[in-house]
Amino acid sequence: MTLFQTIILGIVQGITEFLPISSSGHLVIVPFLLGWEIPSSEAFIFDVLVQVATLVGVIAFFWKDLVNISWAMIKGIWFRTPFSEAESRLGWYIFLATLPAGWAGLIFKENIEKVFGNPRSTGFELLVTAILLVLAERLGKRIRTLNNLNWKDALFIGAFQAFALLPGVSRSGSTISGAMARDLERPAAARFSFLLSVPIMFGAGLVAMIDLLKMPNLSTVLPVFIPGFIVAAIVGYFAIKWLLAFLSRYSLYYFALYCVILSLITIIYAFAGN
Image 1: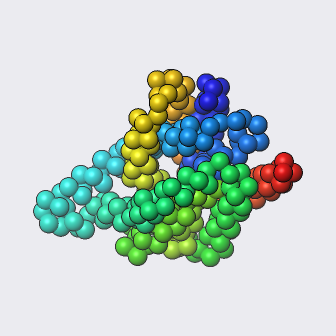
Image 2: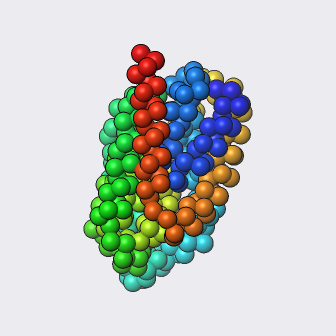
Image 3: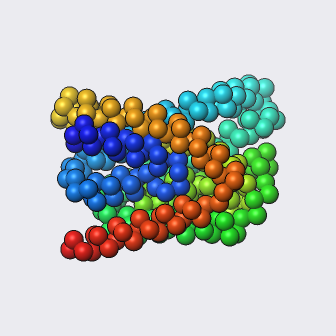
């Protein structure tokens, strides 16, 4: 990968990680449409590293919430009242919602890596994201807040997050859709989705670091990867701020339409190339 490519893809990752349009899908489609030939081993590691970069962005944005949640959980464990405070309950629900995707990621890691870099399948998976967004808007009543969340909601949303292991299915799109299907308001659904991204991105980042250390050309690729990492973290921070404001006023239909258009362009281009 070149420095220019890592910066462009870092910007793409920062914008699309939290918008419900699939960041991993864009990291497959953008190089494909631009004709960039990127080795699959480098592409997969870079994809996960820039996801860690957006983890830095979400931690920077929600650091007060994360501190309050962590402290409430510690106090709850210490005083043997783990569910007495709203912040503590939210923390445990985030942990519970992380389990399905974490389990699926460990079990299907090799199979997931194989579909990375396949633009045709990614194009079809973007249609799945669009369908989820439309169903969320059509079926969700949008009457509940995070204070009304329960363990059943957490597991339900977590199951949706597991779908996002495929590169064309948006993590934020699937988890926001899952939350809205449980009748959460759009901003509350997005907030839970962003907080839920912290543990899953952290876990994926650890796996990526192990793979990165095994790369024989680490000293060569790392200086090229770092600028993309920095750009993704900064852009991701502002993408969160923008999306929370957007969802307080507008629906997910705009993102669903975008996914359909990009999906059709990718599928047509992929079949035309063959």
